[in-house]
Length: 279
Image (cartoon, rainbow, N blue to C red; front, top):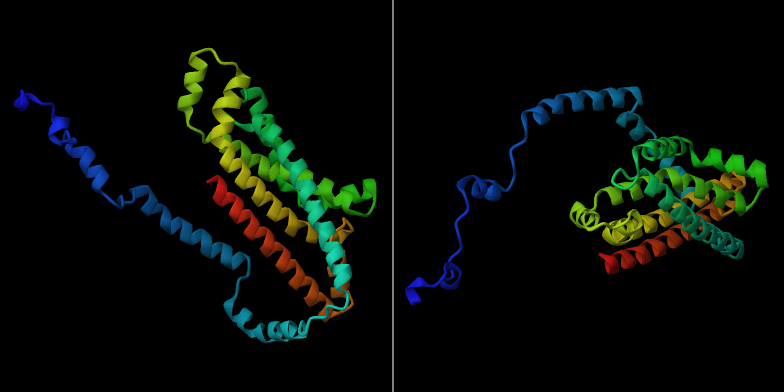
């Protein structure tokens, strides 16, 4: 009886076919011929882009002295208006929070319509085209549009961030839903699950970590974006930043930049901790 024990009881494993073993043992696959042929094309496009964009290392080196002179004017920073800076930074943070929540919720609905494994074709293509149009328009244009509609202030900035989010984060939400494992979805469809049940129990649980990570990334971007929207009067620290630049108040400008760096760094560290918990 001992001689007839199964192979797994004797500690042996069935052998792999030679082709599969070679594929698994090959650490770095050799590049395909079309990839090698594409390298010269990519190099030509890169050189063409450098030339068209007038990228010049020598000119950058010549201007390094002027850059150093500008940076020297930023020191020492002047924190005499720290109360105003903190108040505007809090407003910027609040704008980013509201804009992120509204943008993420609306982007989720748009993503359902733009995910090819969820939406029908007649809904998929219009949703994708709409996101492409929104993504093509700069946020400053949206901010100017809403400033003319609702007036100066953070409300216009929130609306601009919300609308801008539909084009950017809506796309990555849709792609996160498209990248989920099809196995559970097919199994649920095979047993007669409805579309809502497939989305609720088959798509969202798998895509949730990516959706949360992208939402945190959107929040970080909105904090930085709120400082830019303020340039056109859409609230936040941006208007104060622009005023300091126009008045050549370099000490105040330096204090604003330092405070923005501190805020963005704190948010980045907090987001990193949250992402670590969910992954």
